[in-house]
Image 1 (tube, helix red, strand yellow):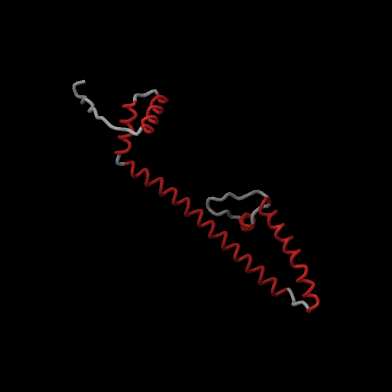
Image 2 (cartoon, rainbow, N blue to C red):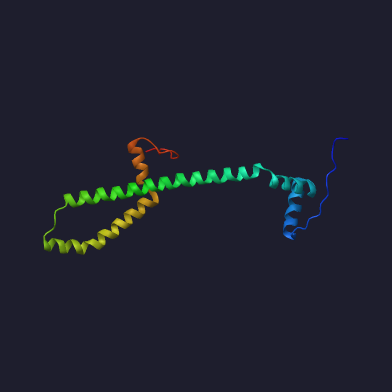
Length: 149
C-alpha cells in the first residue's frame, strides 16, 4: 500500500434538497455519501462527458431531421393529391345550367358536412393515404415499416 496516495478531504455546502437526493441515492445503492459524491464529480469532470452529451444531441437532431423529412414528404403528397383531384374535377365536370346550379348550391352544405364526417372517420380509424401510397409503390421509406393489407 506504499504506492497508494491518501485521498484529499474537502468540505462542500449543499442545498438541503440536493443533500436529501444524495442521501437517498447513497442509501438505495448502499454506498457512502463520499463515494457517490466522488463518482459524480469524476463524471462531471470527465473529458468524454462533453462528447457523450454531443453524441446524444446529434442523435436527437438526426431523429428530428428524419421526422421533418417525412412531414415534408407527406405535405408534398397532400398538395399533389389535391392538385390532381382539382384538375381532374375541373376537366371532367361540365358547368351546370343556372337552375341546376342553384339546386347544387342548396345541396352544398349537406354534401360538405358528409365530406367532413367521412374525413373524420377516415382519420380516426382508416389507413392513412401515405400508407396506401407506400403499399402501392411497394417500397417503404427509411424508418417506416410497410403495413399489411
